Length: 357
Image 1 (cartoon, rainbow, N blue to C red):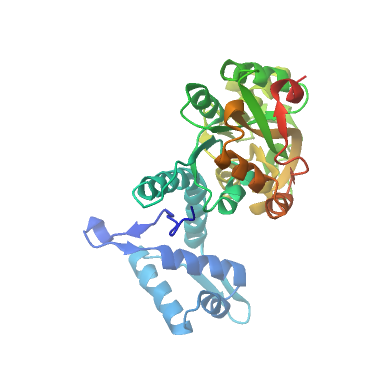
Image 2: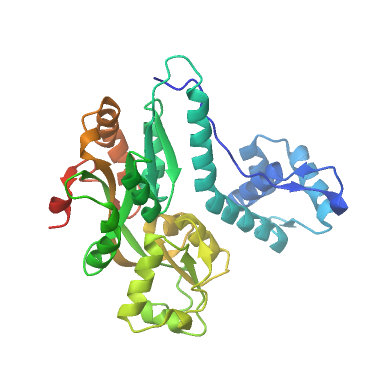
């Protein structure tokens, strides 16, 4: 089955004057501001957005009137730069997109499959639940037409769902080295060594994100206890949060000593956006997110990302198609292009005993 359509959901800003009923979308403005930031001048930004110079200025002036503040600061022969208000709008938009993207992608996938079931020649989709990551995100375009229903869940939720029979594939990650045993012990309650098999997806770098140039001089875990350092954490139940807890425990640091330990974000990109916008000094996540936001990255561990599946399902046509996609050069190439990712064993089937001897 090949999808005849693809559903996508995106967040949208709207602005109303004095709480009135009339709403104005900010999407065109945000896109223009991002282009000004990238191009360094309004003329180039308008060209990049396919707008006339007059229309671009009109858009800026209209929203400056609504906000009652300047959005662009122009200096003769020096180009244009965003005002503090415009910069704040852009960073807020990036945080919102990073925070909401997995939820909206899950809802879009759910809606896609609900509608597909009403169409002729529909077939049951593989149900994939996984913690949000760049390799999973990159996988979905390659599965277009393969009938895969994605739900972003934290690793514990995904594995519990697999154990109940509520999904067919559950994504989770484990750090290599000293913390592997502790985190595996938590996951073991949902994994059956006889009934389940593992499909390796990728190995990735996880570490600290800090502002470019590392102005706070953060070098390791002990710096999280400094009173001048603000930390941003992942949400309850996430593997990254559990790893942060273990790292602090090893260093003899109580979580109460870490300013911001209870501040939660739901994706690696949201962590990076939080730091890049100046709301925190350090967070923890996958290297790719740090690079995309121009942050410095301090490596801590290498993690293996797996999909767990029932052995009995491995020979099903849909699962075989899924495995062929994982092993395709096109997908391996996409993962290899992600900073900090290694796809050398992507699609490799392992028993639990082989993966964790």
